[in-house]
Length: 336
Image 1: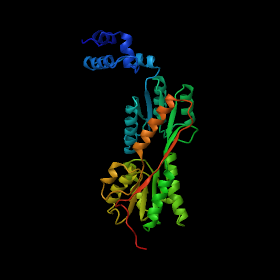
Image 2: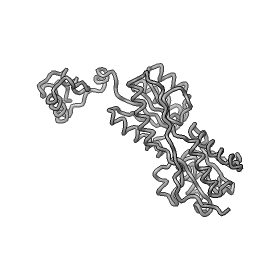
Image 3: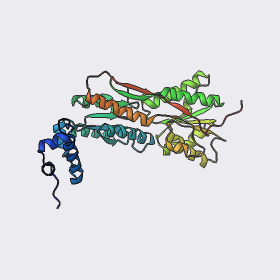
Image 4: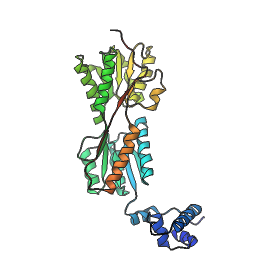
């Protein structure tokens, strides 16, 4: 069995003390010559020495880790969001610990507990199901700062969000401009705050136009492609000229259900989505949607939680990012 390389082995090869190696590898190299620092770091690579995480955390009084809790890792929006977090965290020498709860309160509670137990320095949370007071209590009691993204209910604390109400309004105005006033909405069974705001903005646009959407035209389903597919037959029964899938996943699922019903998008019925996931540009016809800056939300979230970790007394941070309409080919302009 190969013997694990130790800090003592590295110090001996570099002909310096263990303390010198420890300080150089823990970011305290200013007091040493550039030649010594370069030599230690080069030998570390050659010898494959990896510092013990627990020992390093004790020295640094930080593990430089950020817990990230999202409801569904498979959702393309969260994939982009997580890539943004990873890009910024790596830049600032932090490690994200990513947890997907599958919309389970039990799993969310487990991951929160484990994040505390493993001494995460901070948390980024997109909770879909947990009581925000429980989250606030367990993390604050253990001195762990956290940041919410727009899925979670509003509390007094750091937050990153996109303007979902505006986005819903943009879609409403676009459909109305194209002659669609008989519209069906396919929404989530238990809509999170961002989805509620998105729906409110959409409904308000039709109210303002004097063509309110009746309650029976709002259908609930799972927030997935399968959810959209399953809801298609019910949505088509309303004989609407357009359907709004509350996210792109639902809208893309609707495409299949519409095709299996012998209809085509947009000739027989128009479809719009929300999020601007990559797949929306590759379905046929390309999906009209609202772009959410998921990657940028991730980079901002990472920057803000690192700021909070390193400066706990700073004022509350809030970032609201813009959204915009992405017009493609899934909406037919109706003759007036």
